[in-house]
Image 1 (tube, rainbow over the protein chains, first blue to last red):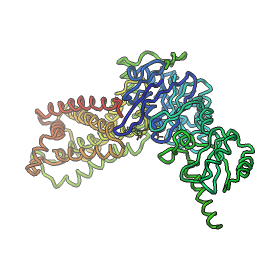
Image 2 (image 1 turned 90 degrees about the horizontal axis):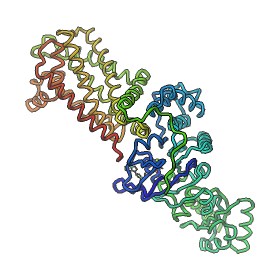
Image 3 (image 1 turned 135 degrees about the vertical axis):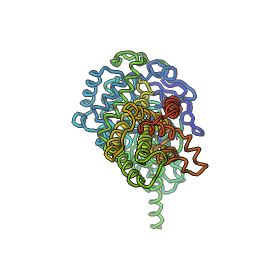
Image 4 (image 1 turned 180 degrees about the vertical axis):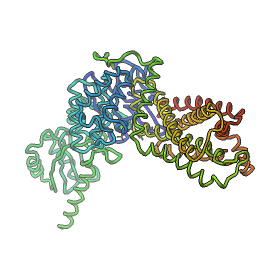
Length: 339
Length: 273
Ligand SMILES: Nc1ncnc2c1ncn2[C@@H]1O[C@H](COP(=O)(O)OP(=O)(O)OP(=O)(O)O)[C@@H](O)[C@H]1O
Ligand SMILES: [Mg+2]
């Protein structure tokens, strides 16, 4: 679908030779932090932006050479809900249907059908201005489905939604996936890509740095992590060796802290087992804990540095760097207080 | 890389979206988006009607008695066509704000990702703005009549004056459309459009005779296209000969429309943003 896409805005290299392909009926997740180039990729594929290099095909149609034909086959739900606030939900859908050149009766029928499918029947006659964020987002997706696109683009469909709306949106997207809608989904959240995407491409600074199924990625990173806070950071190497037989991949020492993270398959019974191992190895440990891996962990494992640009790891989870650093700092303080 | 084969369930489409008929229908669809919204947006309607009414009343009563213009016994007969002209020109600024909003909210991206005639987004909007301006004008005209304004020429001349007024405002809607698709934000669009529209409408013959202005300003005011249009409209409403002003004003309106419609459409459909 996309081959060697490159785009620069002045000094910023938004995309540097990105390739990917979506299998028919599958969901491809484009995972990356703020400013990674996700929206830029989506806008190129949707004919809104011309790349400096590379090409993009939708159903074999070159989007640069034949934008009109490509447009007849795509549905775009951009990063910000593009609903006309002054129109009702029904009118919004009908409007897009007419611009898709459906027959008037067909546009109305589709509008009603989609309102029902997206649980918006009751509010269909209210102006969209009065909708909640989740309702807007659902209407937005419904609008991009009016023309029965062969590829659907969803740019960060859950960013800015509260946790409940987010789960609702996941259900909607999952159902689309089950219905065989070919989808390109961008997201900043590993758990979202994990749940919704059949295949994931991780991008960072405009480059694809990893690709594979969610399981592939987790095998490299660990879906679950054991975090060991050491009394002496110098023990890190020994700890990683000691725990290697329990790990999915080699553990990592978080630079500048006394924390070691070990990706593991299954958390059941892991903490006592790790404590026993470390005890047997004679290592002084301040704390052993577990947590689910985040986008930051993926980045950390892939690039050796945390995902940049703040907020990227999601609303609740902090990156391993910051969290571990805090943990270590508090333990350090305790240690000092005791001695 | 393999191309993905065609879908098995194409959208129900009547024909390829390239025909002239479709382009016109797309323009109408876009215009109806705004026209439908018009009565639902009380602030916009208020701005388009109450404010002009206030203008007519304020100017007529505050300045009405104190200003003398050569050739006019009743200042109101001179002033009111000027207020008409200024108000419809102010009305042309909605396009800048509206388009900047479409762009910043992602509505423009959504529309441009559809297989529609892209300039329809601009044409539809400018058309809806024209209708709104017409409504504004009718309200203003009623108030003007209530305070004693009269058509002193034939009904045909008054009609011609009105058409010229709206055509001139329509031309400037395209200037604002270009602004709207060029600047980054709604706020910028708003201030940018008023930045040029204030001097354009005040350094003119709308409220006073330019010969009363400082000598360096006078030639600017006299050659201002807005002055030319105002003079033509004023002459026609008062049943006087508009002379070359009429054709010059029309030429300005057509020229501005063509040039700025081209520039704005090119900017809007370009894929460089
Ligand atoms: N129109 C533009 N002009 C200049 N720079 C741009 C433009 N669009 C994007 N960029 C830059 O290109 C880079 C990639 O931006 P892009 O919007 O694709 O990122 P993203 O992955 O979608 O991020 P986010 O998660 O914040 O939406 C960023 O550094 C951004 O600042
Ligand atoms: Mg983005």
